[in-house]
Figure 1 (cartoon, one colour):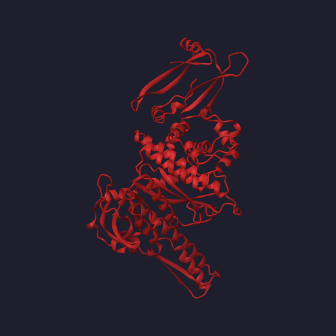
Figure 2 (cartoon, rainbow, N blue to C red):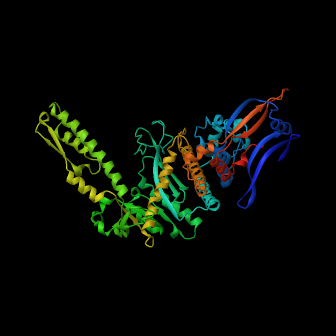
Figure 3 (cartoon, helix red, strand yellow):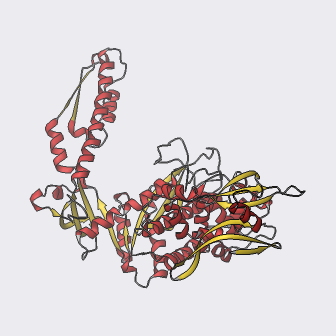
Length: 558
């Protein structure tokens, strides 16, 4: 196929195919001018390139394709107005920030340098000054809480329409992210010290509540809150917002089922769930219901031998959180074995610490009183279930006479294992569901957990780095990080539906292997070198991904 540009004809090798019933170009390779084609056929070269460049293309183009289908920039620009002195719209800046978070997270100060290494400037025409980090900050200042909620709500509608998301089953969970905001900074009340899930107790935290679909783990609602707030205190806010938005998408809120873990349990929270009329699947701490745990193994029946080999259950009722509802007590040999292995490590650590304490006391030089020593022993034996199997005895009247002995009660260890290990209590109001459906719903929590794990990956789709230190910018930062997760999971879902079962990192790595090579030729005269842009050769998986995400629309034309 020949294309006329600048008074000359350039030739391409083009492959066409039907995509969803419509003829589309699925592969395009630049051949050159007539002289270059003749030279190639003759086995010679018209001119050799003087240098080459390699641009990041495949992963960025695929992410941009999803952003284009959602029209993120258009949605944002309908909600917030553009500054009169802005080099680009707020929607454009948010789209750029989201794409960066998907493929190569970096600070706004480093954004311009990264963008120059990609093929993005070919299809996003912006002056170099537009990418200054201060321009991004000014755009972020235009987005308040109300605007962010409006944008998120509209994007959810578009995802349902464009990608056919199933919203009947949603998963709710919460986490927090460590930041490096200075302790003396008073401009960021959102960042507070609390129970750090990344174990960084020395850093200030930002909390994030997320609701995702069980169909692909696609985020449809996010909630940012101070890092010192317990998750359970944010549950009602998320549920109220979720029900409000769901009513805008579906006439019957009763069709919605929300899945959450026991960390969200409280009588007040559950009363709210009951009042809304939505379905729920949660869990209860097994140790709070000894009567259920005492049920004999003879009453257990298989859940679904094909889907869940070895998983057995008792379908019953349980009273908890102020109501009596359906309870499904499950027993998993796999979970039993994992809990047994994990628990064996806990008493071993306790015995090692008790041995150290016993050695110190045996020297007869301690000055601590009995209460202090007993407090240390209690702390060592505090981890879950350790006190049931370890017995420590302190003897002696004066500090110099204190002696410690301890024993492991193997019979108690076996009783504990038989009573608790491998068991879960699922709690639901879905009376007509099969036990397999209840189990499947509960296990869909892995979708939101995978999302949080992905956002803590420092390489792709990452929360870090975050170089913002005011509440307004932190909220916008969290928002486009969640958007990046949305884009990545939509890409993974599309690939999975096409038969390509890849993780987010594997998917992006395959796409990143599709690069744009820029060959710079000098014809011998004066003037700038002529650029020849070509895509690298693709393996079969990359070819399928390129077609799936229609990245050829962003491929070089010459």
